[in-house]
Structures are given as C-alpha cells and as structure tokens.
Length: 246
Image 1 (cartoon, rainbow, N blue to C red):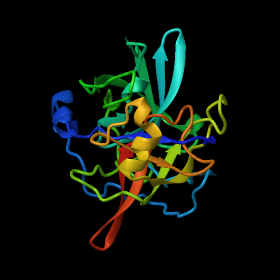
Image 2: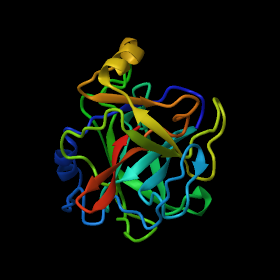
Image 3: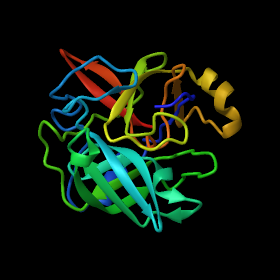
C-alpha cells in the first residue's frame, strides 16, 4: 500500500446476467454465509491480514507472454472471481493465461487454479477505465470452507458515501516496489461524487459507474488492482462484508 490517491470503479450492472452466460452450471450470487469470515478483526491500516480474515481475496498471476503481471480478485461464487478488466487487457492485447491463487494470506502457500474462461465488460474503455470490470471462471470449482468463501455483492443502490471501507491486496508497499508475499489491508473513506469528479474528472470519471475513495498516505498500489473494496454491511442481527472492485 503506497502513498497515493486510490481510485475505485464500479460496473456491476450486468454482473448477474454475465454469470449465467459464462458458466453452463447454475451459480448464484450471495449464497448463504457470504461475507462472513471465520476470523474477525477491526485492525487495518497497512497491516498484514490474518488467516481466514478475508477468505474471498485471491492473487491473480496474469501472463502476457513473455511478461507477467500481478493483480487481485474476489471470489463471488464457487466458480467465479470478480476482477478488473485492465488486469486482462493491456494495450488492446488480451491476457493469454490467468492463474488464481487462493486459500491463504501467504501466496507462497496458496492453491492455484487456472481460469478457463473470462468475460470483460463489453463497454470497457481502456483509456479511461470506464466499466473496468471482468469475471473469471475457474477450471475447477472452489471448495468453500473457513479458508475459502465468497463475499456478498450489492444487488442494488448502497448508501456508502462517507463510509469507511477496506482495501486488501498483495500490492507493493511503495511506488515501483515489488508485490508482497502476505495479504495486507488498509482503510479508506468513500468520497461523494462531487469530490470524485473534481479529483478525477480529467481522467474520465463517471459518477454513474464509478466511485472513488482515499486516505492520506494510504491506498492501493501496483499489484492491488482488481482486488476488493470492502464495506461491512449490517443485515438484521448479522454483519457481512460486501465488495466492490478496485
């Protein structure tokens, strides 16, 4: 997590329909138990994540041969991972292979599975990051348990402005640094659209499809792209994590 203004994008309007088209097997969002980790902690701000704290967070190894890049992703069903479109397309060239590493905060101990299919938002604009969202379908389904679980996805408008959120990833700790071995987290505040437009309007910010968040001296960095922007959402007597994409 490096000193920078982090920018987060939302493009979930076609997510449910795309899930149906991507997989021959029926998969549904927000299954029972989504967004409820076995380990609960309120300690954030650049700290290492504990095992079982965010069992939906995954590390993506993306191959644009001969180059390799790191990204993040979020498990949303037994077969699907939510990530960023720009992790799968670079200079209009589509990624050749993606390996999803999951099941541990230490990526050296994680399990790997190859993505067999990918779906990039049809209206993704590479120059402005509008609709910067994509889905991966893994070759073999995840087996849910304490160390692997899906996060919840908001299915309608969420009043998240000025709320605290958490970003997690294996990205570098400073600009131009290498990715780290252990998953880390930091807290940010989701900003009003007016502020986001002032800060990022010249970069093509769209308040209909995007949001932004920041915290001085903290944010997402290289290798964090595609990972979860998480908000704790209270439903009845329980509290669940819901995710957008970074």
